[in-house]
Picture (cartoon, rainbow, N blue to C red):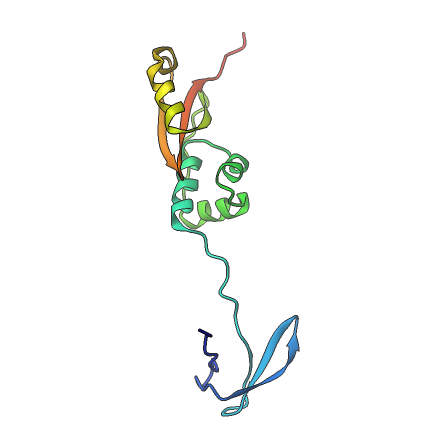
Length: 142
């Protein structure tokens, strides 16, 4: 099924092609003589990835790491941070490390008591896998 093109000025569907401008087809409305081009739909990103990216940002994961994990441009993540006015807490004593694990790997991790000591962690769904974010203390140099 094709989309119907309508004149943005008079909403008429009575138009003819009228050349190409900057690689985009140009049209002329026969009803009102208005020239227009059809706007692209644009590329939209699933809100799930926006929420995950912002969660990871708040947890201290860098923009480039978020890009590698989710496959979403670090510039997009930065724009969402600005758009939603997100600021992460300033904490220099801990830094996050992350692992992407399957269900079996996650169960093995949680079964090892030594892994659970001395740091906080968070588990979040990431498609068909799980992401484990763990905070570890920076080592102080004397």
